Length: 388
Image (cartoon, rainbow, N blue to C red):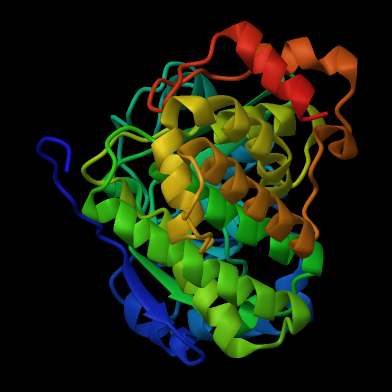
């Protein structure tokens, strides 16, 4: 394990088919003015909205709503939410939806009492909140981002062609999250498999990086094996509760900071994918799927022993008679086959990227230094071209 570290996660989780019944108890701890945040309206079609409103009314809460939060929340939508929250004097934000709604709600929470422009403060200068933070609670309807138990908040600025995530500290993490796997079962298959790959890549970003053979890596391998098994069941039968519940639980543990303890982390696949998303507005998990294999094949020689371990410990490939390089390539080939089995998008051109966008996407890609190889701009361009 690397150096010294601390681990603390303040989010309280309620998991299972009866988890919504705990909402009333949790709301007693917060103020009367609730900002209810949700996406495109599916929660009204499936009845969840009515259930939540009934609880809010029973608690005597005053409710204002921010509806229509898009899959890649924009800076304009952020400013709209801040305006509504200020007018309502919001004491608490209740996010109902997938990771984008949860991310967005955290961005609103640090911006309501912020005197600066939140985009400039949090996403350009990467400053931390210096104002009062309005608490957030989440009711999750899609598994993937892990936003229900972390401080991450990704916002897109289409005018600047930037999609940037800021990982805030403990004070911004949701106070509680309600996770009912049944809520995820109405998602289209495309969204389900995109979420599954988002989970897988969250683990990979922390696994293929820096200090190896520590406890965090063994946990990661178990999470990946479990996800692969459950994903195959869910693709064949999306209504399989056990599979969907395992996927949801894995998503939470993939990005609640546990498996990053004691090692450095990479996150370049996310930087590449988010820059693609800034140009295409494509589904986040699909942007990750489209760039990840070219990136991993590029950096594999610099971390070949870990990629060989990935092949044996995650994909069950026999090491006998194979070099580390052969094992490493076999592991990536196994992942590629699994990705195709799920029906993931494998090329950024399928997401709308054209050759004339490559330079701009490269310019918008934040280069991080936690992985086996620190890319320069020309290498970013090479990976993007290989992803076409």
